[in-house]
Length: 328
Image (cartoon, rainbow, N blue to C red; front, side):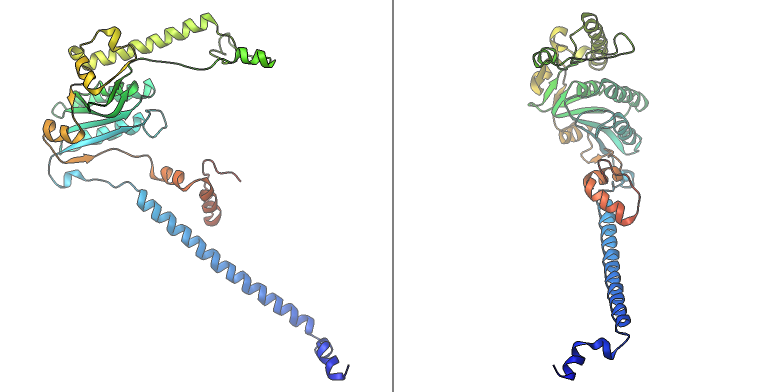
């Protein structure tokens, strides 16, 4: 090996500071890499922020100023789904929508469109009571219930407070009754050799426990509770429908359901018609303005975005939000 080759193989001999130069190169390379990563991080954050803003704009409820046109209209409020506390359909949301509809100076009539298999008696009762109050407060504005696919149980509890009820001939109407259900696993546990250990403070705190034998005294008590709720339901229907009810009570309040056409015969429905028909032919204001309130758009956005996306958003933007369902 000649001298020139040895020099090329050992550059550190010609440059005693080669270690410092190498460290500088590594440091600069690391700095450039960090700067590149930071730029991408900023880009990613702004992209997420833009996506967040677009979704907010897309799902933000649009305020309808129906009074600006100066024309009379039919106000529409929709009930779609189970009527439950904290659910997509609840008393607070429906009542607020009805109040807005009645308070609008150009509302000629209000339609409550119902497509619900039922709900809790408390939530349905709140809505029914408010409908009665609004009808008394605004006697010149009629309130009609229009049934689409189904109006059963708690759904009909609400509809009974309307001035008149319309349905499609194929709608399912009725189910006036109250129920409580569950399961019993006592024999299954015995066959499996599983021992039930239940401690309560209060003799009947384990009421309707599915892993314990039925207690006749507790069953009788539950039946009395159901009967009280049942009688309340019957009273609400009688108050709302009055002399229009035609069938025998044993049939009307048996928990059975009927088609829209059959319900007319029983006095549960006043006529056949859609929202458009009632607005045009009954109320006389063909223009329909939807007053249905929606859940808070931030809540709906969080649900649509999903828990995983919420976690990324929280970390990248440093919002410190707690997204339901998200785990670290």
